[in-house]
Length: 340
Image (cartoon, rainbow, N blue to C red; front, top):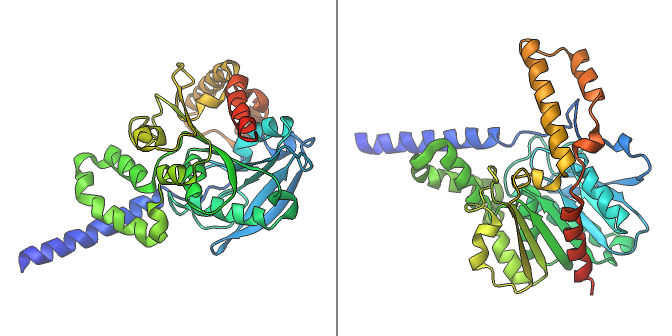
């Protein structure tokens, strides 16, 4: 009797602990007051149409750029904790190459509704909703659709290939293979071997949140669709491990003959996000980060709002996120080759 009671107490306690830890990792991602990244107002010459569509109970905000470009439609899926503005440089690049671009803020992110970002599978559900919205727009549904996603979005653009959408090609940057793969990897960093004991409770809570969607994998979508897919990952990615939860770690399970793999191994450009940036951007970031660190130390860890505003006012946001042109050109050429 005592043993059974202990097991029940342990199970209930474990489930509650897993829920608290899980939910704390997926808070609402509001647009920050200060940012090093480009803001919409920084590039007024790139006009956008703001739209709204439903994803589950929430209304999401989307943005259409390059309207009238007829090469095709690039759909941009952002990473966790960010929003469309975090990928404005990439959006501008695609528009300049002649693409129409559709981007959106996921559930609980920036201008979209949602009390939280919910969890790892939410990016898949939101991309599916975005593609359904695109189908409803006559001027968009006639264009060949290319998917471009990073991290959370990198998972989504591959996993959504499990669904019935007319996708021409997809590029996944720093994406994970499945929500459970990623959850297990994150848990092992925090709990080590105890993760194996807690796995049933992680499985249960994620299934309660997302149902069958918790088990949709990128590899299954890639194999099922047969469409051209480029998988890009940095070999020193400390967020989604190259030999762990990353899609690229599962390449021996991928049977789609139209998949191209790109490993980023150049030092300073082989992490989770820095593979996008030019050498000048990497150097500038290092300088500004050191300046901010020194400012923070000088003021005892509490920077007044006016001082913080002055600091960010001086940041060159174009240089901060200046793209590695060769990196982006590879992606653009991949999309263009899929048109033929």
